[in-house]
Length: 183
Image (cartoon, rainbow, N blue to C red; front, side, top):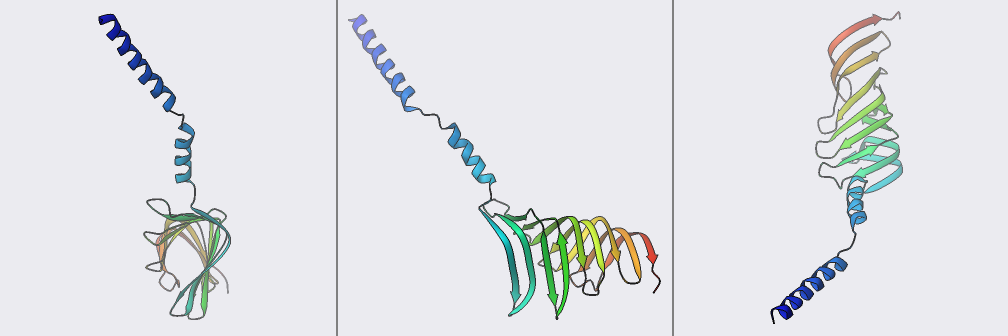
C-alpha cells in the first residue's frame, strides 16, 4: 500500500511539473518590445509649421523639417532632430532663432536650442552660440555658454547672457571682448 501511494504521489507531482512546463511560454521578445515602445516617440511629424496666437495675433511661428513627440514619457518633451526656425513677433517686428537641434519641454515651457544657434533680433543684431534656452512662459532667452553678438556698431564676445525676447534688455554675464566697428 505504501508503494502504491508513493507511486500515485510521484505521478501527481510529475503531472503538475509537466503541466507547468508546457503552460509557460517564452515572452522575452514581448517584454523587450515593451521597453522599446516606451523609448519610441508617440508620434512623428514632418514639415511642421506651428503658429502660436494670443488674442487673435500670431506671437510665434515654429518651422521644422521633423518633430518627434515624446509626450508618453513622465517628463514629456518634443524633439526637433533636424533643427528649427522660430520666429517671434511683437508689434509687427520679428526676431528669428535658428538651430540645428532643439528640444521643447512641456512641463516647464523651456526650449533647449543646440548646435549652430543663430538669433537675428528685431534691431538687426545677430547672436551666435552653441546652446541657448528660450523660456516661453517668461519670454526670456538665456545661456551660460560662450556667445558672439554682432551689431552694426560693435562685436561683443562673452560667456552667458540674459535677455527678453525683444532684446531690449540684453545683459551679458561675462564680456570677454568688444570690437567697435567703423561706421
